[in-house]
Length: 55
Image (tube, rainbow, N blue to C red; front, side, top):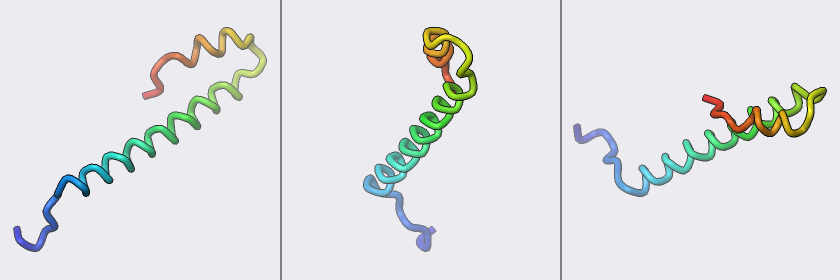
């Protein structure tokens, strides 16, 4: 359709960067929440627990 904007490489690149940054910000906050939630355990157990994927 001519009224739609063509998706060129710059739009795709900017869209990918935005999605990548949103994913990294969410992953950072989920990681910090999991560390702060279980503060009564050992630091070693917290490190091992947070190596799993969050999604």
